[in-house]
Length: 171
Image (cartoon, rainbow, N blue to C red; front, side):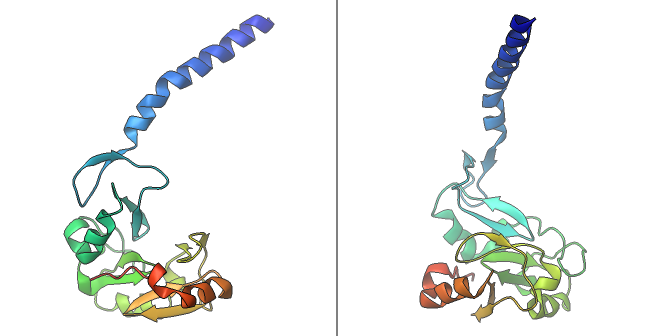
């Protein structure tokens, strides 16, 4: 009986090993900037667009993306304020913690800017990278129209010491 169980476990392990390469192929993506197909890893550069992750093939592509994001974003997803289809345009774009949020109409950008915590449920802290739940009283800073919210006062203090390290300017 024990040998049957051992044989079954070994067979299951073999099946998982054989299927692993197929899962790696499933992770292949097409870089929105270069058009190259690549396998994304945890270290691949990325940006969130209305909460959806866009991953790039190399460290050069995010800068090209930031110079004209609307050229590369085909679908802005749902407006975080109204839940309607977001319009992909510079006038409907809000940058929060170096990620993009597109809104659906003229009234939504000001609402989102006024209280991002009301509409965005999770953000990566711009300093630590750790995901946190923003609150209306989260430490905040605005630089060139881009909003930065922080998990706590210590990460804001680190940000304030060297803003150029953390700010990714969008055009």
